[in-house]
Image (cartoon, rainbow, N blue to C red; front, side):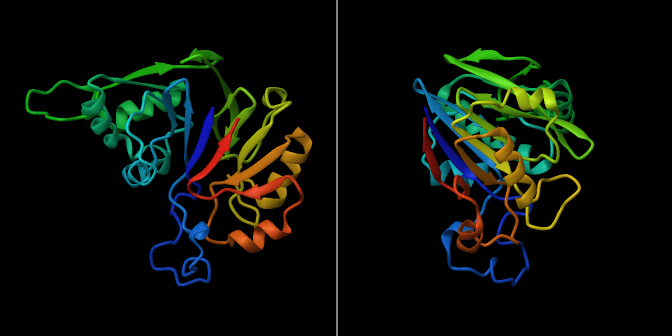
Length: 252
């Protein structure tokens, strides 16, 4: 299984529009962050986690030629607003794409993008998607997908465990029952927004504490803001912890 971090940035992306800070104006390519998304490639299939606002750019950059399924963490704009780009994959694949998420997430997507899920004679070339509600583990293309319920502020959202990998982006608390599902990981990809505490995201210190408690062999921080310089922050992290960057590949 190969995992590609397509985007490692928070909702604004980095650089932030109009910002002249040292990180937004940095020449370091690892400080350039598109909106958070992940690609899992296994058994000749590509599973996308979230259709980020930057999906078209990410697909072109990483030469993604097919998307066989989408897992959704939650319905915030930076995680779903690239959904219309799936229509190009429909055209290539000549078939619909299954999309999986919680009841809350799928309902919000179907409401926000109702043009996709309604039949109007005047409509043309829109995504062909099938939506599926999930709450427990299920098999997809030979992989066992385990939804993990976590707290994003007051919102309950999903992370996902797939084998020895777990992906949890927007998160401010992991309930005890969910922590048990995150034991024994080789790789934990975890959201860590910035150094300063935030009401709906882990800070760097909080994410280090969670990663340490879960005893993951390798912890990679994603959903990063423009307050985190790649080189400077990495140097200060404990052994076994590191920042993600766009295009980072992980083999499991």
